[in-house]
Length: 448
Image 1 (cartoon, rainbow, N blue to C red):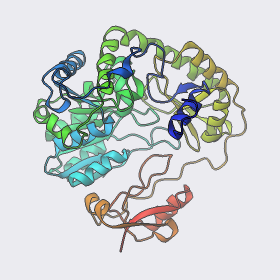
Image 2 (cartoon, one colour):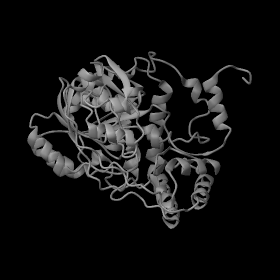
Image 3 (cartoon, helix red, strand yellow):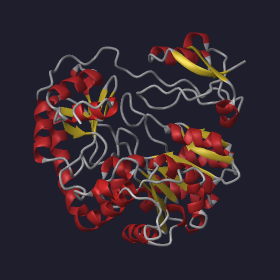
Image 4 (cartoon, rainbow, N blue to C red):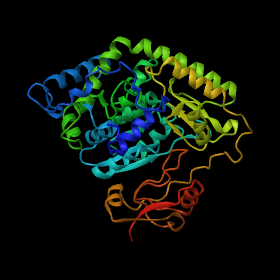
C-alpha cells in the first residue's frame, strides 16, 4: 500500500514510524499481544449469533453481566460511542423530562451539548482553587449543599472527577450531603475507569455515586471509543438501554465491544498486580520530577496520572512537550504551564526509562514570569437556556466585540479548564477581557 492516496492512513503510519513512547490515550498503547492477532477480522454486525447492543439478550448481555459482577454494579452497559454516549444516557436517566441539574463548572463539552439536547437547566457550582496554580480546582460538598438548598427541585448533581490533570473530588462527602435530598450523584469519570484497581475505594461508584461514565479506552486495554456506563442505583437500571439507544449509532463497532469484554477478563486476572506495579513506576517518575523542581498538583489526585508543572523550571508546557518529543516521548497534553502524561500498565520498561531520562534532561531556568493564573470572573448572567442558545442561529465574532452578546457555545481557557461563559450566558466585560488575556480571540454568539 506504499503508493495509496490516503492522507489520514499515511499520517498514522508516519507517526507510528517515529517510535515514540506513548504517554497518551488509548490505554493499550498498541502493545504487542494486547489484542488477538486476528482481531481486525472480527468486524461483524448484528447477526443471529452475535447479539445486538441495544436489545442485548445473548453474548453482549452476558459480557455486560460479567463486568457488572466483577465490579459489583447493579448494571453495566457497553458503549462503542465513547464516554459521550454514557454521559448522554446518564443525564437522560436522571432527568428524562428536562429540569434542573446541579453541575460542577469543571465540565466536558459533551455534557453541555447534552443539556441543550435534553433541555436541562444547569445550576452551576464553581470549583475552589485548591489544586494549585492554573489548575481547575475541586467541587466541594458545602457548595453542593448550598445549591441543593437553593434548588430543592434539582433532579441530580453532576460532577467531573478526576479532572484532566488528575485532581479527585471528595465524592463520598458530596454523596452524603445529597442523600437527605434523595438526589443522585452522577460522575463523569472519563479519566478514572482504572480507579477500581489503583487504590481502595477511589472509584466514585464506591464512594456513593449513583452512575458513572467511564472512558475505558483512555487508561485500559480497550479500543478507542470503548466506555462503560456503570449504574449503582437500582432506580436507573430499568430503561438504561433505551436511554443509551436514544443517542447512539445503530451500527456499534463489534471490535470495540469485544475489547471491553477482553479488558474485563484481563482486569480480572491481572488488574490488581498490574496497577500496583504502575503505581510504583509513577511514584519513581514523580520523584525525578520533584528533584528537578516541578511541583505536583495539591490534594487528592489519581495516583497514576503524571502532571508536570513545567512553569516551575521556566518552561511552558508546550515547550516542555516539544523537548519530550525530541527525547522520544509523546505526552497527552500541554498548556502554558503544565504537561500531562497518561501511563498505563501497557507502557514498557523502556518507555518509563525513556521518560525518566527525558524529564531529567529538561533545562532548568527561572520560573516563568507572570505565571500566576488570572482569577476567574464572576458567573455571567443567564438570559437563555443552553438549548435555546445552542439551537439558535449563531455567528462567530471577534472577542473584543462580544461584550453584551449571548454566548452560543462554551468558551474555555486551558488552564484552568473551567468555562468562562456557557451557552445562554451574557459575555460581560470581565469575561471578554479574561478570554482575550488567554488568547481566545473569536467566540460564537447568538445572532441578534
